[in-house]
Length: 259
Image (cartoon, rainbow, N blue to C red; front, side):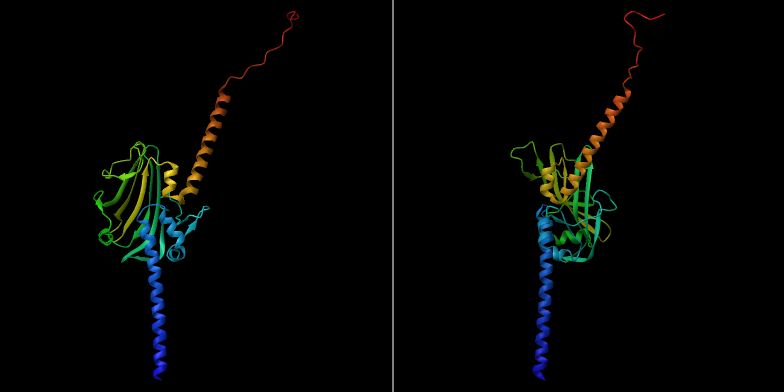
């Protein structure tokens, strides 16, 4: 009887250890994805692809034709459709991630503004104190910023440099691109952590950081070319319609009119 009980105890203990190890491994792999996200570059999408079996337990994933894995939202350009909530809470270093948001804003004069990141069921102070390896600095009264960088095409060599002027209200000047990570309190007990790249963004630089946007950018370019084509055709049609029509004349005899 003793050996039977001992066997059951060993089996239960072994099963518990295996389950605990599996949970720890899952959590560790998920942590790697979020750790990489905080770098605000294309490695985040590589990690999503590598660990998609784990991350898809929390939120649905999608893959582009170029095999780039990303977290889809209904529309990145509509404020009421650029967010997706998780199926269940993702625990990250004691914090609770409950959603993902992807924002894309285009302006006629100030360039493009992109923000992508996670929604936490934690206050900004809780996030800031937990992610204390990041040097959070005040951006305005409600937002913190970290790892602010600037890319100036006029400087040689052209490389990302620290941006000491990353403060609220300062727009990227022509020929420059800014990036950074932002922490903002959304409600009394929820906050967001967003990566951002913004300014005079060319296609190559944009897709280097955000390869998941290639299908959207290509669609926008196709739609733009179609609008240009339609505009040119419309102007040509208007020009033709505005030209006076020549009135036909009666042919006359070289000998004069007959009476």
